[in-house]
Image (tube, rainbow, N blue to C red; front, top):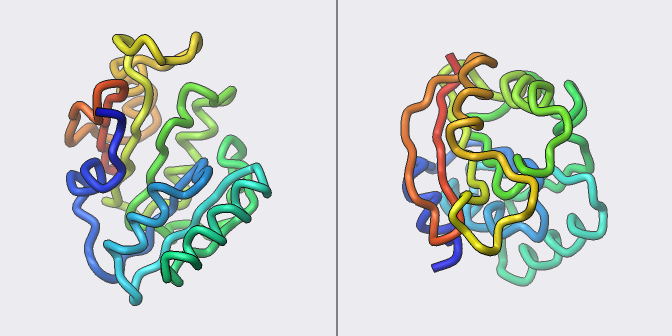
Length: 172
């Protein structure tokens, strides 16, 4: 099975009223599922550098009647680049973006900046065993080391479909 946002988010403990940031939101598969889980009193900030994907996400959310997503044109590889205030998020999602990041330490530090102390980040990325994975990828162990050196603690790891791994960290 390919990576399933609903199944992966079930492992993330989203609850009604939380604020979630989806970094590299793309077409919004995770944003829309997260928005459903946090309910009308919660909010999802869908951040991407590609405006056309954000417009598609906005349209898809509207079609599905999801109204608690705010699209944000921003750059998660730059500290302050998401344009979100410090400690705004209870949870951060980064799906299929880590392998594309050129400044991984700055990416981690931006997550740390926007995440509340004790908040969690879920990384979903390409597995080394997948024949579909891109040439450049970040193996789970390397991702773990990257986040741990930047002030996060691993709290869960799981298979996120046949082609992806999942890691959940808490901000220390």
